[in-house]
Image (cartoon, rainbow, N blue to C red; front, side):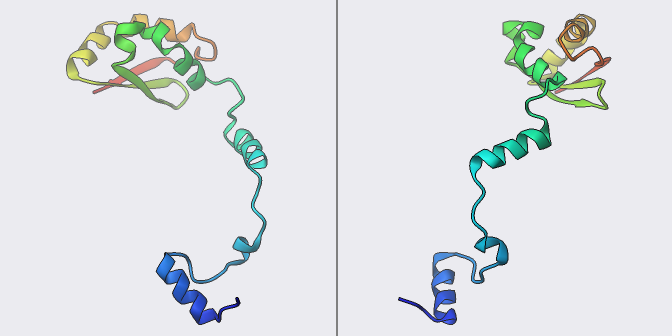
Length: 121
């Protein structure tokens, strides 16, 4: 059954759908495979990176007791790793181990450019 435009708008309002049909909504949907290829290329998900290396080796760098209580936040300017910790006590503990931790991080693949650690609680 075909409805008038005003009737379709009332039904759309009731269902919480947009009232008008845009040109983009008339396009056929993109397949998920094509979308994944585009995302991999755009965000370089398949290429090796220091972020990936850090995440994969986080427990090796910090040990099992500390790895769950601290997390990498980001790498700033390609050489400063920012780490988030759960509390001030852990922050102080990591400050004392900063040089040893940085040496272990620099030995990881693709992490040789990291020159500084910033620890935030």
